[in-house]
Image 1 (cartoon, rainbow, N blue to C red):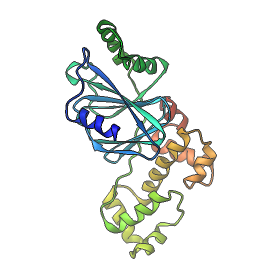
Image 2 (spheres, one colour; image 1 turned 90 degrees about the horizontal axis):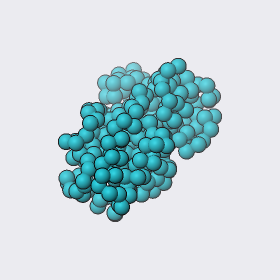
Image 3 (cartoon, rainbow, N blue to C red; image 1 turned 45 degrees about the horizontal axis):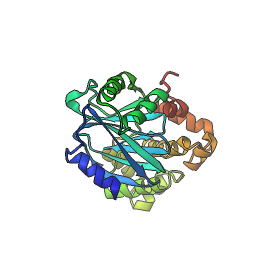
Image 4 (cartoon, rainbow, N blue to C red; image 1 turned 60 degrees about the vertical axis):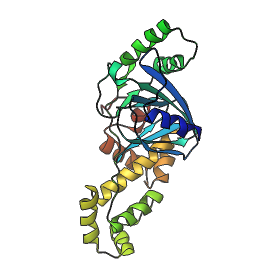
Length: 263
């Protein structure tokens, strides 16, 4: 697969030589495709001009419509996929020549100017001085977003994992904790304890995170809030919006479109 071949080259510290600090790579991804966990020797700014990307780092998960990119520091192990057909456009930036010193994955707002600059740097006919001038503008356009990723810790206990797998397969599963406990052969009290012990979250909180994470790609693809909320198990849009704001700190619209997290 061409995507994997090129990514393997990047991973192996064979990013093509460039007069500047930035190399642009473009990788078509089909809906549902995920690139296996990997890291880069260069910093990466991952973005798509169309479609929706998903990037997972450990238990954290970001949904990236064209209005958002994700800064991944060199060495951070991550998985990248598409929830709708997309072209992953990545800036690979030499850490030794980078003015940005963010040490954690950081979402970035993408406006028209940054989008055009990425396309400009992707050109193969740029003169060296033009490329260097364009690259110098990039750090000034990286505006970090304060919204947080949605964490869904992966359980290791077999009984908790069975419940988790059922909810991941169908976030709208409305069964109670007691019903799930019966299904895996333990008491409600035992499953309650195991969930907190294994994930650091209560059953209800973990299920909320699963539902919100499942809703984000639907919203990014333009599905109305009412339909997305119902699809992931909420009876009303208001209940979904309240859960989203309580968990993420902002509304879905602001989260996806680069707004701030102020009420």
